[in-house]
Image 1 (spheres, rainbow, N blue to C red):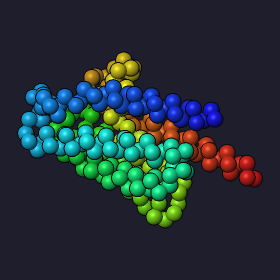
Image 2 (tube, rainbow, N blue to C red):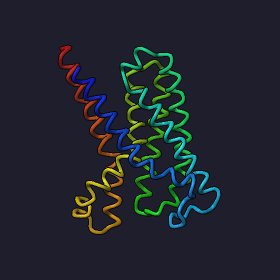
Image 3 (tube, rainbow, N blue to C red):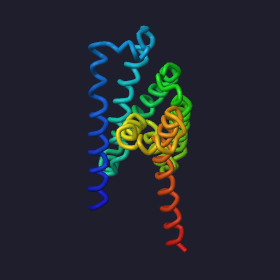
Image 4 (tube, rainbow, N blue to C red):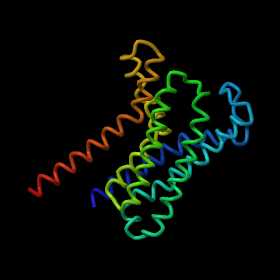
Length: 208
């Protein structure tokens, strides 16, 4: 019961943050993308808008991938939404490869390419392992792909609450942006895979 409450609380807080950061972006659909962002060309705007739309699909379908109560009761729907999640992820990744080269934060681009490429690798492994009926590995790589996708939220949380720390440990502003950008996806991945490793070790120890 406690685990269920914690899980629901996590998703509530995550989506609260997601919509808090997303809603201001909707004005770009009606007012256009500001000139200072350097995305005035039609192609730039197209990729930007498609990225936002695909990202919304990734987040909303992702929720139903990771709620055990929904997955266990509606397995067929879970599988269909999983296919949508993977397709939307691949499309979102594609748009990022067009968007990142023009990102205003030049020092962040290396980190963003790494995160995007890891997202592609993880989602590919997730698809591969479900075809092989290796459910645990499929679930873990699906979760890892979602962590990479969650960069939109985590990087903004760091910007609001943790940039003071990165500014204090970095030599200059560019380094601070780079370190904070890497932390946005690397720290959650390390936490998740450490938890998986500890869980596997505990189960193995109990079976001895």
